[in-house]
Image (cartoon, rainbow, N blue to C red; front, side, top):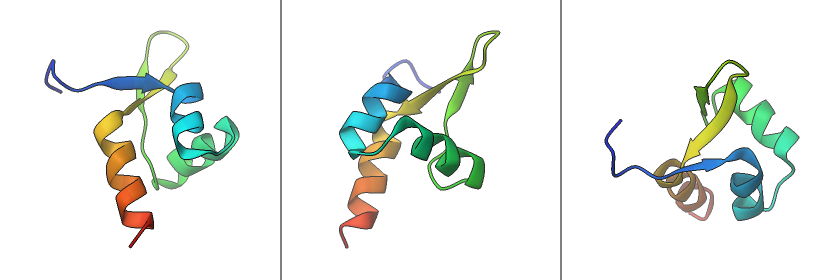
Length: 60
């Protein structure tokens, strides 16, 4: 992962995608929109680029 990649928390990603955070957790578990896990708690972070690609793929 390069330093230029922007990571967002699950709540911010949910707002961008207009879905509930639990939906993102399900998508991560199914491999639909994969999160990066951080720290002892394994908090989810999403690449902003991945979110944008996901939005673009859904709008086709």
